[in-house]
Structures are given as C-alpha cells and as structure tokens.
Image (cartoon, rainbow, N blue to C red; front, side, top):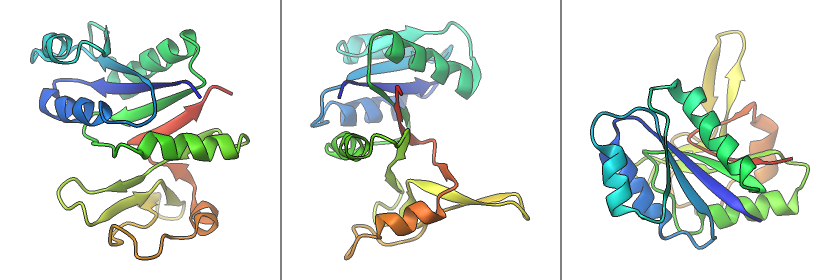
Amino acid sequence: MTVTVVVLTWNGLPDTRRCLAALRRLDHPAEIVVVDNGSTDGTADAIRAEFPEVTLIETGANLGYAGGTNVGLRHGLNTGAASVWILNNDTEPEPAALTALVRTMTARPEVGLCGSTLVSLADRRTVQALGGARFDRRRALGFAIGAGLAWPFEAPPEVASVERQLDYIVGASTLVSRD
C-alpha cells in the first residue's frame, strides 16, 4: 500500500525535527510531506537542509489545522497514494507504527480511518488513547479510550472492545484510506 505521511507544522521546529527523525526509522516505505503553515522561525529552511528526502510544501500563511492538513491530503491524493497518514508534528512514531496501521487497513478494506495507540511523550509508560475516544453528548465532552493504562501492555486490550466504544479517531495519528 502506498502511503503519504502528512506532518503539519507552524513554528514548531524542535517537535518537527524529532518527528521527522522518527519517521526516518519507519519500516514501511512512505513519502514524507511536511506542510509548513507559514512558520516564521526558520522551519522551512531547516527542514530543507536537514531532511532533503522530505517533500516540503510551504503554504505562505497559517491556514489553520484543517486548511494546512488539506493541502497535504491533496498532495497525497494527487500523487496516487492509497492512504494518507495524518500525523501531528509532536509525535514520535515507533518504526513499526505505519506497518501496523497498513496491516489493519489491508485486512479490513471496509475501514476508512485507523488510529494509533498513543502514549505520552512525557511518560512513555502511560497510554493517552487507544486510537480514539468516546463522546458524551450529555456533557459535550470527549474521553480518550484507554487513557491512563500502563504501556507496554501485559495483555493488549481486545480490539473489538475498543471499537465498540469508539466514537471518533484521535487526530494526532490517523491513517486515511483513499477510498
């Protein structure tokens, strides 16, 4: 499966550097695209110099999260990617993360979006979310599924149980199928 990874940044060079360094270690091939949303901190120049393999798209203005991400999505779709992995610039994915997402999407072609297990960068032994969250309509609040669990798992949570609770995918790491 061909994948384009879209990382949006705005004046976030330190985070973006760490994210791109982690993406270099992925065990699944992918085109890495950084959408620079009008940064004024030298992000674009630094990425060009330090990560020449990365496709850099400069928007010239801060288009916001949705606007900047859509620029990256369009690029991925226009270049024929089967899927686009939207990834926050303050994430540091494990080498096998994309492989796991692709494996899930390939095994279940009816699935259009797939989220990742997210752990805290401050305490990598604590789960932030098991790919998504529940939404309590009465209180208008979202609650991350699995938040606070210990990582790595002694016994992984049952996928079906997580999916039954899932109302939405956490946007920090979302694999989106072209279909």
